[in-house]
Amino acid sequence: MSAVRSSMAGSSALEKTLRIIEELSAPGGPHRLAEVAAASGVPKSSTYRILASLVEQGYAVTDGEGSYGIGLRLRSVAAGVCAERPGGITELLEFLHRGTGHAVHLALRHGAALTYVREAGSGRPFRSPARLGTSAALHSTAIGRSVLAHLPPQEAQELYRAAGAPAYAPGELSAVREHGYALDDAEDGAGAGAGSGSPAVRCLAAPVFGHDGAPVGGISLTAAAAVTTRAELERFSPALLEAARGVELLLRRG
Image 1 (tube, rainbow, N blue to C red):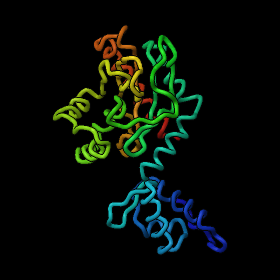
Image 2 (image 1 turned 90 degrees about the horizontal axis):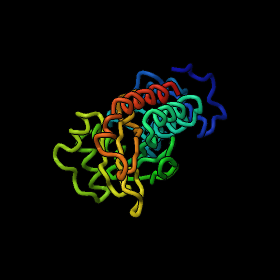
Image 3 (image 1 turned 90 degrees about the vertical axis):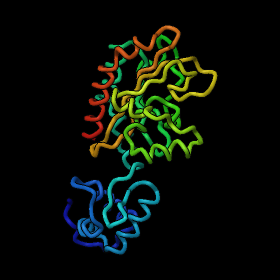
């Protein structure tokens, strides 16, 4: 925890919010309300109001009993910043592309969707239907299903329902957990999160976890179904899983 500031005189609402976010992100969380207030130097009543707003916006989470932790939206922002580091994650994705010959994507979760933030080799030998900066529903992508498989079952079911998608088949997500990866087998662009009319692809995806063990996104290998069989793509699953662990380490260092 950082030291309590000596004076709160003249502190703006933004400054107080940033102090609280700093303390919320400190090791050892989740943190009690009183702990955050004391460490940030923000009055307890103001801390409570700011934390309530952060929870509402998705930047914080609470157990309802006075403890607060980092929310998914804040994790996504942090992971996105880390993904911009040119010397780490990008090089790792490029290495995976060169070793497999397939397009590689990194996508990060935000609520019921994910956004593609990094890619390698998407133009060769074919243009992957995934596009940097675009979003896709979790249930419609291999990366998304690799994330859903590691969420509490009730939460995964609610995300399917909220998207208007059929409930997942019994055993579908447990199989993903067992293998460590998800596979979209020759779907019409769905494996990469594109719309109809995209080339049929096969997509192999592995989840990426945050420091607390919650899935924050994933990486994938995408290949044209016309030239790559399921068995050929799955042959690269060990390399994909190893790369996912490497991405995790780089994100956590950020």
